[in-house]
Image (cartoon, rainbow, N blue to C red):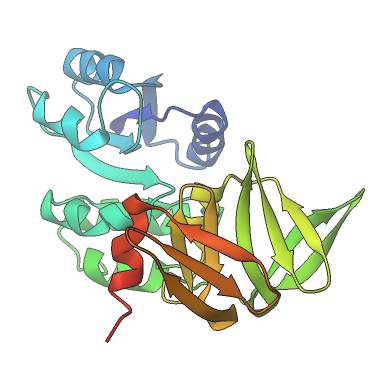
Length: 242
């Protein structure tokens, strides 16, 4: 029997994990928290054997939580961000669940936990991270009136912030995505889609020309749109210059 705590700032994430845990009667859920401060309190109070730990949370990050614990339990990270994978390896995490994950992927994490505990050979975490690293999609689903349509990313000339949403601009049509521009930036291939402004991402393959001014650049896209490069994102452009 292992005592378990779930730490995740999203209620949906905690609920899904609780549903998955129902298949493992030897994993006993003692409690949950939705922020880093409460996480430290509940972990230090109950001294669990295992913590499913989110990374980006209010109050402090999952890594910050670890530095405030009286005893270090086994950790399975659960996060939507893959850039923390190396750091997870450094703190000897059992596994790194990249959201959204399936029930089968959750089982892999539990199997790794059991294998590590029983001294059996488990798939190395580094191998798990490489296998789970998401590939950038070639086509995406976006809203078009009352339905979802597929759009080839190669057709997307640029992306523009639109309040809490984003506009995906192609030569034929403009689509609205339910995701904010920062979330889309995380999902896209960073070698092709470059952030040039807090409200703009461009497709490098759709760039016609770049005009330099005293302290900034304007990028003309193949459809004639002109996108300003802000000072904070200038380095993203300079890295491409040879």
